[in-house]
Length: 271
Image 1 (cartoon, helix red, strand yellow):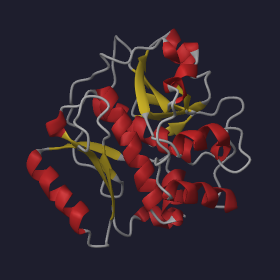
Image 2 (spheres, rainbow, N blue to C red):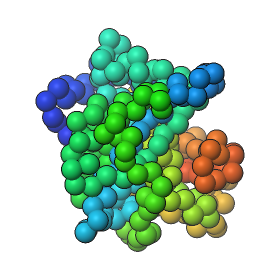
Image 3 (tube, rainbow, N blue to C red):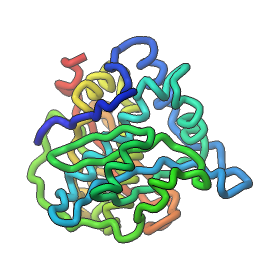
Image 4 (spheres, rainbow, N blue to C red):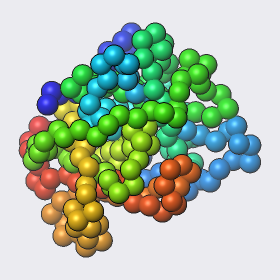
């Protein structure tokens, strides 16, 4: 597995530093999200659009796409531009403090190039690319994004092998049979929750590695054990679980992803 690569176009964010700005962005993330409810005007509902690069000729592995999506989502949330006095701060906080949503779309060719012109963060993992866009109202989506397909975004499951024990693992509930688009949104939620749950030094160390993580399917027996760890918690590892609101594909309250960061991870040593 290669390290995720963060794009560096004109106007890109400055390098991350473990300074007061990063601490402030992490503190905001650690507060969790949601709670603000939906606005009366449906067009003002806030959502983060996520674009998955899925070429027709040589599509990437599903697991790599999900890893890129998870990394891109949390990278945007800890980007200096969403922090105090950042150019994206108002749009980001309006989304994070409302009833949070993510919508994954598929792009290829010229569509993918156009999507990278819209404010956001792109990450690449093992040849798979995903871009998390600065959130905003669903009634005011950039036309370059609005025309991208949502439904039908799917890839077959693959077998990437054992996860690197030094990396956080995002376990996906295989029993739910989520499409890759739905799963991309869910692992994006999970990476955000996990980063906020980590001590700030460990979150920064994770950021220095491009928020590299492993995404793996959890079969029912493993999922049951993971759920027990979420409910029990031994304090030796950081665990974050995603429970879906049930807008699409799964029933409300379904637990979709469980993210686990290794205890005393070597991620800490990079801080």
